[in-house]
Image (cartoon, rainbow, N blue to C red):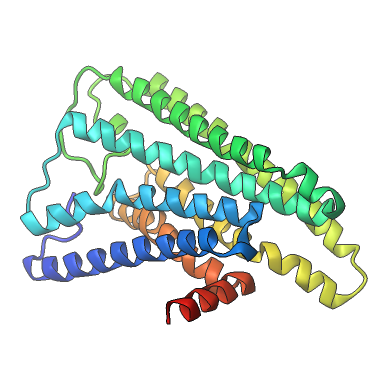
Length: 295
């Protein structure tokens, strides 16, 4: 589905989304470069942040380049194999994003609630294992969605009511009864979404309980400032993600579904570097040190 049928808007849309994609790639690459090059940022929190930036690059690259090419060429056709491939990578990176946000919440929980044991608990081996587990869980989630869609034998029409191939859009095109497939898909989505969200909720429940026991106001502010950026990203990710994933169930209009998809697939990866850099003193200091070395 094209974003607009007005031919005069096509160059504007092309320029806008190309600029957004470029800013997102460069912003996340800058976060990765700063974390890897600065010795002050060789901690578990920034290790997870650099991996989140890498996943965000993959996440936005599954949808936006194809959309930019479609706007430029005025060709909105995608093959069945390419559609399944795009859906697989989309689900994989979305699930990895979800899992890494949960891991980062656990990291903040250990840092604030068990500061004396932080370096022992969050060892390099555990950090590497958590990132690997996030990758494998994302791979499992994407393959489960693939298996569900591959059960479909025919489609009543071939127009996808979004600018990319998503599981809910493909299921809505099936001409056969998809109630059982819908139930399975949303059950899988609930499992892979609810369990990480429960982990984040439990971590922040413990974090807030610990912060409230801190006697000084400055101590409370310092403790909460270390996880404020993460909490903002979590709200942005889950708020838009739920609208996209359960859009067909909620009977959203195609245009509202597209707006939610843009917020989820474009704004979230683009804003993450700005949220973490502008609200994080360590990242800003590291950026200044990198700039000084380059000069």
